[in-house]
Length: 180
Image 1 (cartoon, rainbow, N blue to C red):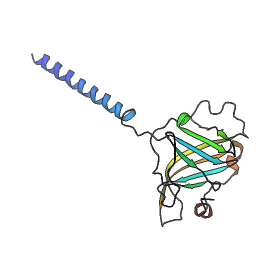
Image 2: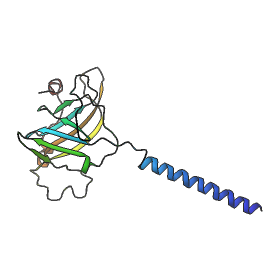
Image 3: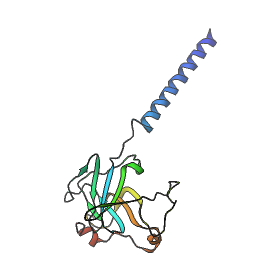
Image 4: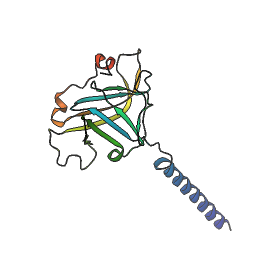
């Protein structure tokens, strides 16, 4: 009888542990994860350089949506201040991050270059302008309020041949004259 009781107790504990593991997996990888809202970025025609998007900016551009996606209209400075709160969580970059050059009568889609993606280097000419280095974070730029860290998204729009030749550092002039 004691052996039977020990076996039943052990089975009960194993079922409890397995159930807890399944619940953790569902919460961690499915139902409990934050999903980023899809994003559509409109860049000035021919823009190359680093793009900076700063969130929670009282003087920033109003929130704008296109269907279910956040819309970011990047000014010529490459610096956008927006009233949107930071967008974070998991996202399917192939579907939910879209980048376009905005021409007078049309849009030209920019492809993304993602280093972790196996097909990202296939048929990619070093002169082709692509979007890469998409990053969400909190950055301190040494201007604005003393020691201020701003929630931001950054990425580079350029050809791969120019990446190591250019300085993408944000200047105080670009930060202050962001809406030009």
